[in-house]
Length: 324
Length: 297
Image (cartoon, rainbow over all chains, first blue to last red; front, top):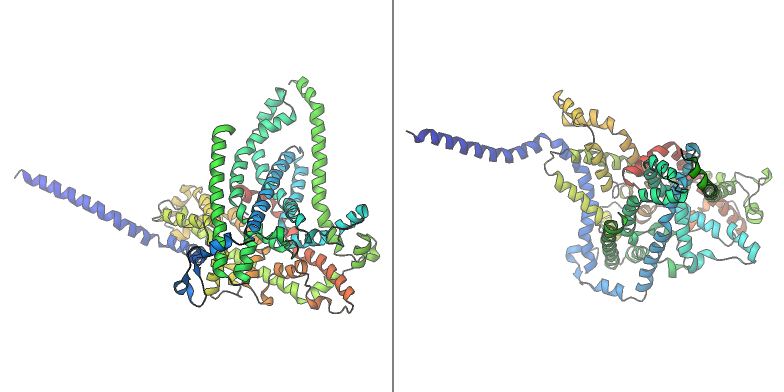
């Protein structure tokens, strides 16, 4: 008699627990059913990313095969690391690899600080209207296409072009800029700064305009000179932004400027202008050497990822120990 | 105020500021002069430009370069193709991105985390040029506009961006609509979308410009010249030095042909770059916003 209520309670509890358990599973499905429209919203993007990002990731397997289009991934022969070996031991490996690294590292060393300096300079322009107009002008080259930039470079630097007209007036001799490998990197990097520095400065200009103006007033009262204020206030404001952008830039080292490099490539400047991506394109797509091209591309991606991780670690350490 | 210290520093400071102004003027000139040279050059008779450089004598001016461009179909057709590709690309990029970004911004979404990881992973790792090409090829997209429009349309970074934006929309707005009995779809259309005009506009702007100026996908996926976008036609003229024969067919002497071809280079640069050059100042605010919300390219 006394047990009955307990039983009832127990049963009731059990029921509740059971019900709870059920409702969690049920509610998941109920949720999906009720909000199916959200999943429909996701479907197009998921489909495109799956087809054009994930299937190619799987397709990377052909780097370890002698892929033939007619036999497909399942039917082609596996060759292990043979393509990697043949790339790494090929006579032009060192040149292509060092061209890639040099082009992007020099580009980074020269191209990275310019937008920062430009932002610091713009920040000293007092009249808002003038500042805005200067910004408008320095952004302009960003909107010119890579093909047009390459075309302008060919026009300006051609033997009969305006720059050689000036040079011949001074030295009496013209310079074959586009067919001499010695000039390739300089041309590539300077034109990159011309095109990109203004637009890249936007993010720094915005960071500076968010800085507390009272800091400057206080520093001025304390007798700090302009350069001291720029160094101790403005530059400090920019440091975190620079750190993030630097990590991203280092991560992108292996994939830098390929489209422009390909356009500026001439038969004569190949010793300096052949970089990994142009090589992948020519060997893999133009000559139909699919597996070899995929292997070289994969090599490039992996080096890029390693660089990203290293840069991230280094900046973390620097930020942790010295900057703050 | 301590005028004393201001005066102490002021002479050196003023010199720095003066130097700053000079440098900025030089930078502005370094940007304007090459652009102006091409624009002026496009109106100059080619032998004048070649022999004596820029001239402002009206007798030396001509519209011949532009006439040649518009008489031949290549540039015009490339222009129209580019409008089509850039619009299609922008439409897909914006709609797919915004829909996905909204769904992921719903905090209670079952499986939302897994799907976010699915997108993020694709941002850091990719199969590369050759495997992507093989996928596009096996889908039968080579030589169709879809090869330009589809593969790059969904930018993972943009999805993350819109998700963050939608998360910032006050919950009360949604709840109020729910109480009124609005469905998820209805809430999205009439509450969320009107609020997200700025971010939609920024994504559309960057997508359109990026596609308008791109040439590489078109180069590898399109062989049919009638499908070429403007940038690919320009590449032939400017980089490969192959002016469409129709533009210079009337010139008989080889030297004359070359001069006409040279002039066409200048005027085609102007025709191709003019639309963006004229439009971007109106959108300056949005570019600044766009770069701020997440260094969109």
